[in-house]
Length: 71
Image 1 (cartoon, one colour):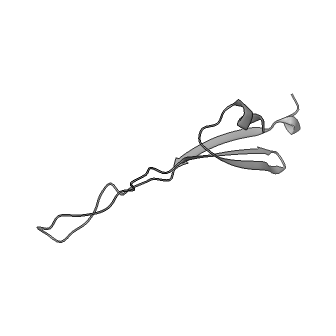
Image 2 (image 1 turned 120 degrees about the vertical axis):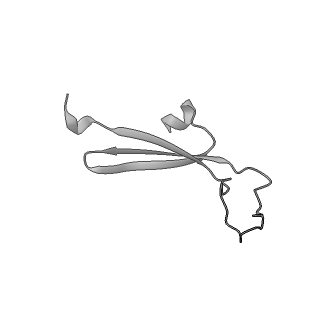
């Protein structure tokens, strides 16, 4: 197999509705905070590279299906 023909594709995702899990307050006082009312969308990043560098990247909202992967 010719290494010059290899293309690596990777996928990662993130949810934009993140909240803090811990907080700080003065001794004896309660920590108050807010959380997002509407959870944000899931964002997926696809990227491809070969031995010469980046070939392209694609950001989509939601999960990757067959059509998004082929694009």
